[in-house]
Image (tube, rainbow, N blue to C red; front, side):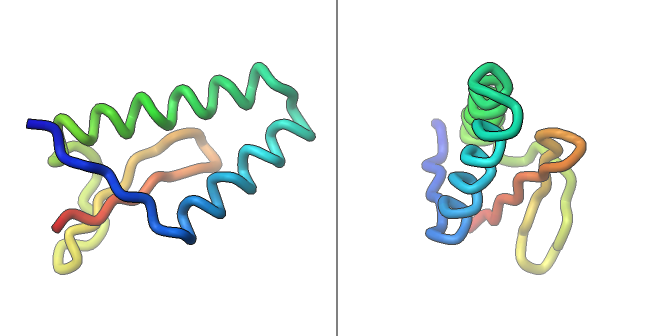
Length: 77
């Protein structure tokens, strides 16, 4: 059963800022590829939450490399 992914307000704001930057500096193709890659990884995490690098064992935070400049962090409950 897939787990529900909940975005924090901070994560959502930062994601939108990244999208705005990519749109202005790199155009719609790069932006669409970044968004698609992000949501593909989120779907994968939803199905297999043990994937990724364990960044903080106590807080159960896992990291995922999106691009060489962006990492996605997920906290499990």
